[in-house]
Each structure stands twice: as C-alpha cells, then as structure tokens.
Length: 79
Length: 313
Image (cartoon, rainbow over all chains, first blue to last red; front, top):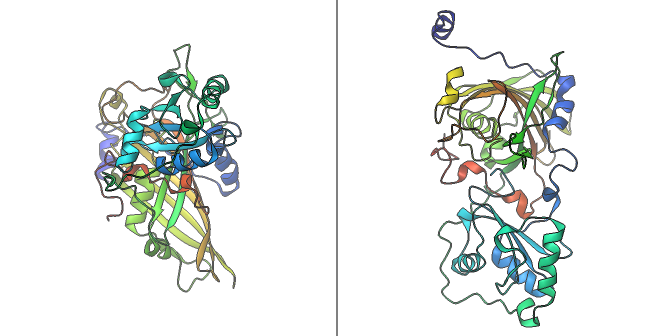
C-alpha cells in the first residue's frame, strides 16, 4: 500500500510488470534460455577439476595438460 | 580435445594442496587464463597468449611431442607432509539435490513474443565477442529437497516452499548473472508455491509458481551508482517425484526477469544494453550425473559472494 502510494506520488518508479509464463510457452522459452547448439563447445569437454589428478593422468597417458583457470569462480560456471 | 590433452579447469580460489599450488605457480596458471604444460611442469605453446584455438594448441602439442620421455611421462610423487588446501573445495551435501541454472538475455518482439537476444561484450570494440549463456549451480540438502515432496498428495493441493529454498533459488540463480561475477541479491519479496498437478502410484507431478523482487528497487538513475543491482523475476516450473525411489526425477524451471543497476563497483557495463530495465531469462534443471563438472560449487559459496552463508536460513 505504501509502495503504491509512493509510486503514484512519483517518489518511487515502478518497473514494468514481468510477463507471466504461459505453460504452452514453457518449452520454447527453456530452449531459448539454455545454451544454444554450438554456442559453447567447451561445455562438451570432459574437464577434470584436480590439478594433481590431471598430472597423474597426463603422465600415465603421455599427454600434455590444458589448464583453464578463472580468477573469480570456476571457468566451468559463471565467471 | 581429450584425444590430445588432459583438460583441467580450476577455480583459482580453490587451488588445492601445497604441491598443486606449487605446480600452478610454476606454470603460471591463475586468473582468467589458459596454459598448456607437461605433467613435469614445462610450459608449452604461446604461454600467456594461449587461446583455445587449433593453431595455438597444435603448436603446444608439437612442442610436447619433442620433449624427452621423462618430461612427457614423469613420475608424479606427492611430497610427504604436503600442505593441505588453504581452502577445501566444497562438496555437494550428502544425498542432496544438484541443480544447474542458466541465464541469458531476452527481448520481446513487436508482438510481445519473448525470445533470445544476442548481445556483445564491449560491443563498440572491433574485437567484440558475443555474450555467452552463463551457468551456475544450486545445491539443496536432503532435508530441503524432501520438504518439497508432499506426504499425502492430492491433486490441487498447494504448499509454500520453505523460505530458505525460496531465497537461495531466487537470490543466487534467479538474478541476471550474465556478467558472471554478480553477487547474490538480497530479497525484498519472494513467493514460491508447489501445486500437485497429478498423482499416480508411480509419480507425483508438481507445478512450481513463483515471483520475487530482489536487490535495489527500480530507479532509472541507478545506472550511475555502484552496487545498485535489482530485479523482478517470475518463475514457472515442473517437478516430478518418483514415488518408488523417493527421488526427484525432473526439476525444470523457467524464469523471466527484468533487471537494472550495476554489479559491485562497476558502473561501466561490459555488456551494453539499450534498455533499462532489460529482460533476462533463467532456466534450472536437474543434474543426475556426477562428473567433476557437475560438482563445481555454486558461485555464491565462494568468499566473494554475498556474505550470506549459503545454507543458512
């Protein structure tokens, strides 16, 4: 009630209303929000998350290690 | 990729035990960075300038093949009395639920139909790159997810979702986190209900309806202020419970939101948008596999999160 009064008085701006999600629109929106085909090929890589484990596997398999780091969270999630 | 390299992704904050920290320092792995090295610690390829492109990775691979056997296949020994990790990598709660969230920008067309919107990092820059769908995790404890399952379900029954689940869902992955390191927003109002849509001997089908007002209240002038993020979001979701296994087999959520303001100390957005508020979408889904990538902790469990304990009320 107080908020409505403040909005009417022009003291507080109200954002536009967030649209409701119709059940018949659910799958279309879900597909639009999820990563798009080909958008992030790095998501398809089977990353390890332990450097010691990666060194052990690299030594056993005779392969180099590709290290992907982020300063602010995991590079596999939001950074 | 896996045919030629052992790919490892590290959150620099959880770098591991003493030998792991030492190895990362040796190969200069840290920050927003990519490096190729032998297991012995020899840096290969372009060093600091390396990107995940074939021509650069091929060079690193050629250098690796030219190394002597003892560099390519060294004996890895963990030193005795190695220092434990300064910060232990958090594990998902035992028997808990792991959910994965996605976030992207959306826009409405002239008829009001909402769809994906292609936006750019530093769009005025000739080297701009498209803003990618972001992802994050949501962890629920066993007691929390079990609280979502009605004991005696009847079609049409409605129940409020516990406040701690509501807040965690809305405040951490119900926000616009397209610029990545965006802290959780504090809630102003949250509502989330579960309605029983169908009951069979095998399954309970539930619908999730919710809405929240988060962070700062809307004001167009907030684009000049630090830490001024706010958003309104509305959710619709479907949850299916396997009654025989007493397990959640589906947890699909879609959310539409309007967002405004600036994250933390940034007042110049890396992704310039033409409208305020702007529209974003979130999706949430159940993670059933348990690969390392599925066990990455939620962003807001890290020290630079909102300062609110992740599993607190």
